[in-house]
Length: 88
Image 1: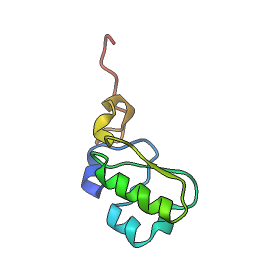
Image 2: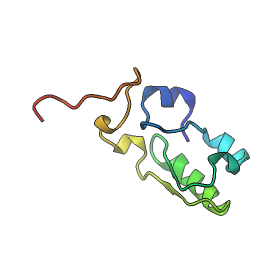
Image 3: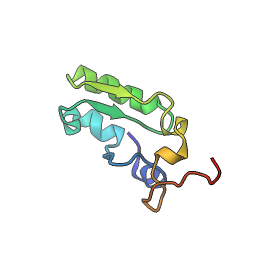
C-alpha cells in the first residue's frame, strides 16, 4: 500500500508493490491468495485490508506498518538484507 518512493526506502523481502489507489480501483490485482498488506504506519493498509476482505480476499493489515518492524527484517535501499548489529 506504499508508494514507489516509500518502497524504495524500505520494504519486506519478496513483497509486491501495489499503491492503495491502484488497489482500490481494482481489488482483483491483489490476487486470490491470502494477503498481508502493509504501509508506513498501518493506516492505509487497514483501508486496503478492509477493501480486500469486502472483495472476498483473505487479507490482514500489518498493525503499525513497516515502521513497527525492526530494520533487520526488511530490505535496505540497496536491495540487500539490512545486517544485524554486531555484538547482538
